[in-house]
Image (cartoon, rainbow, N blue to C red; front, top):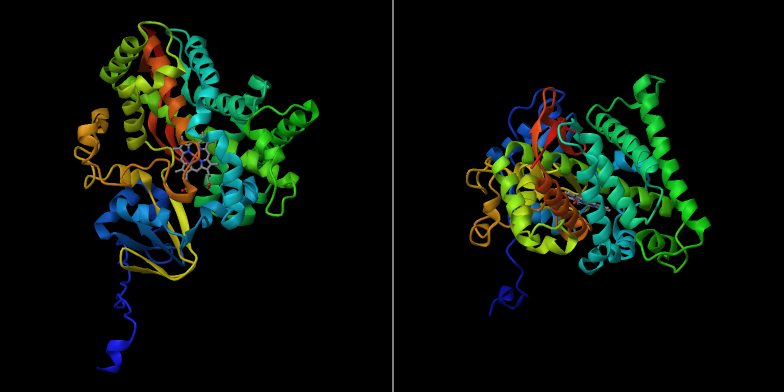
Length: 456
Ligand code: HEM
């Protein structure tokens, strides 16, 4: 018996490889200029270079993950946390104590506080509000007039989030202020991320002043909402009450700053993502009248002609598939980042501790390796007998793992209901001057979509 044979068996050390470097970098800027110039095309081509590739962004090495399986592995692994330039810039502006940027025990505690408001069995309580808002939107529009899809989509998204989750009756005036503030803040934040000019953003230039005003108003609005709720002495069963009553790890009430940052961390992603998705849905209804007609037919078959209700949503299979397919081709969240907290690996590639990792749901969801006729709008690819051909994690618009969007059911219910209500009432056509090309910001949305509703 040799000495080796009585040693406990250790798995053979796997030789980790260095990820290949993406081609096309230039001195000093590396791949940064390509990422800034045409980020969607750049991210979509990275898989040609490898499953994990190294990018140079200025002096920094960043790792990009390009396959569905590895984006799933990344999102599900404890070796990576939420961090990186995107989150740092968000924290600096929106607050450091909200759930979207927290990690570790604080994040777990915060998720426990907010999760009940988004659970599948909590959603029906929001049904009447979603119904009311979807029909009010359809009624607000008149046949033949031009709809500014950006402001209208923001408006309904903010109203639904605020009415369902914060139970406020402060609607239109505050919803408008929130829309203006959020649109300006998100535009400015994206600019600060891709063109990091540091102190130049402190100069008293008109664009910086407008940005600072919008940011201040966003924080003021949240303070007003919290103060009003406290003054009312009421404790409705909603997310705001859950936040106001939340306790920290020691059982003490959470601080004012955390309450504030939590409201911001929920309202901001909640309205920007939903608003962008509604804009793409309106674009889809205008550009694919055959699917708009199928949605209308399905709604009529399910409702027998009465106004569509929340309870109908589960029966609206095709409408749901239309929403999913629209989110596949035009995902609101197009880029996500993580940071490695230890030396680790992905797909056999070495990832050093501290490395920033990026991946693009846009690139993953349009990849011809995952989708046949990948650029075609085909809602039937989500039918049960076809969906099995789609690789795991090739469609995760809400992500997976411990950072998964808490609002997946909440979002799908309202998007399906709004699509059903609008397609039943109108056909849509784009009007002259509408700009439906993609505007890349923190989310993806059409530049300036304008449509005309035509009565059915
Ligand atoms: C997180 C997508 C709507 C609140 C996320 C993440 C994604 C996402 C991909 C994970 C980010 C990551 O992995 O780094 C979407 C999409 C939406 C949507 C596509 C609609 C179409 C909403 C709404 C709300 C919301 C309506 C709230 C009202 C949040 C919050 C987080 C989050 C608080 C942070 C979760 C955490 O870090 O634990 N969302 N979201 N989202 N989303 Fe959503």
